[in-house]
Length: 263
Image: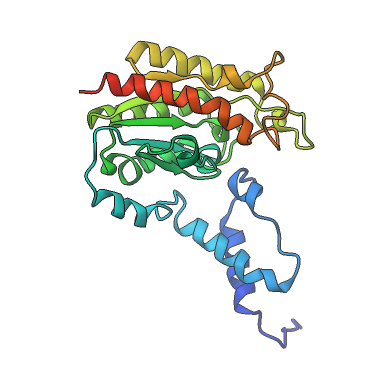
């Protein structure tokens, strides 16, 4: 005879278990990097809510919705630039490195080019920028949203560029930053340097063929082994303040080049 539980399962447990069942067991990436199993019952509501939010807004279109509404109510201006990217852009305090510039941060931690492509209209095109600077690809290589071939990743880049050009937005593609194993986190295991080099080679070639501006972050941030320079990142993946100091002049020069060619 089957024995029934005398105490009903709490609602937060039911929500957490339902969300866990819906997620593929092998899904790497954003959830793996940012979510840790709860250590005590007090954490379960937050864990359940995080999983539910992820399922309901996989592309995170709600992240910048309110600020997009605010910006769209303002005059566009001839020098507005949108920074589209992942955590490296998300963590970049643009107002500190580009004071007084009308630069808009639309980075979201953990995202891949697949998610950024879906965000093109609400987070970029509808803001009517003069230029778009895209730093992406490292999370595609790490399979944050599942396995992806180089062709699939570059198709997303090309679609982003073509959407931008169709709306008279100048395109700036950034080379993917190197990673390193100098810290306790061995970043090259999920982001092999050879894969980064292949994607960067395509970005350089595509930019040359189509007239997109290339912001080469890789060269100033890489050491002679092709690793992210020691001391310029605290985890071997994300630049720290010293790392952003290397990137900022590259970004600004590329933006000015793009704006000079804007109609």
